[in-house]
Each structure stands twice: as structure tokens, then as C-alpha cells.
Image (cartoon, rainbow, N blue to C red; front, side, top):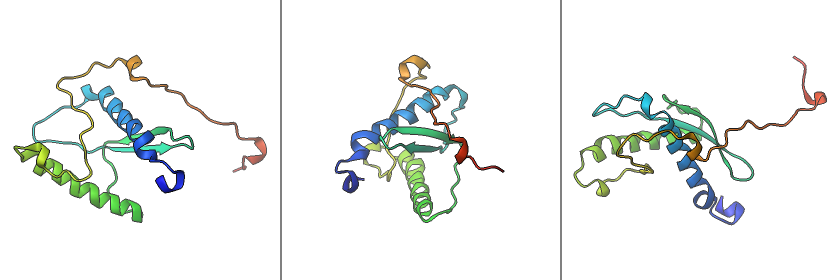
Length: 141
């Protein structure tokens, strides 16, 4: 993207949006999860970027598909599975957590307590946007 647009779109615009979406989603449902020692859950966030580099949440999967449906997903799934083991086994058992290789996983937020869900403080604007499709462009089934 840097070559195409001349600036680091990920670092300058998308990373913070992605982190905020993930954090806000997980905080909003934190009271629905039962935390058990030695257990973890992997979530799949489907995100979309529009032409103005705004990040949009499409859906969150509590059991994301880990199949090799495309060449891109094959590469990503292999990375995620390997890095998940690094976090779940290596990081969990390490005494010096900062020294453990977690692959491409990074901790983006750590809370010591359950956070209240003040929806107005999220800064979210929950809207559904769209454009009318002219009648002549709608195909008949």
C-alpha cells in the first residue's frame, strides 16, 4: 500500500482503527464469556476498508474457518496456527513474557478488571449506509 499510495496507510490510518474495533467489540461482550484458567478462544474479525481508508466491521466469528480456501488464506492460516501455539504454550509458560516470540500476535489491550459498557464513550457511529440502485440496473429473477 505504501508503494501504491505513497504513505504508510496501515501505520498512519488502519492500525488504530483495527485495534479500536477489536477492543470495543470484545469489551461490549466481555460479560458473556466464562474465563477458565488454561483455556482460550480464537476470534476471526472480518473487516473491510473503503476508498477513504475507513475500516468497517463486517462480522466476528467465534469459530473462524481455518481451511485453505485460497492461496492467501492458506498462508495466513498457517501463520495464525503457528503463532497461536507460540502464545498459548510458550508465552503462557514463560517467566519473562517480554522475551517470548509471539509471532505476529501483539497485545493491544490489557485490562485488570471488567470494563463497564458506556456505549457513548466508544465513539461509535452505528449507521447503515447505502446507495439506491436504479431500477434499470436491477435484474429480474
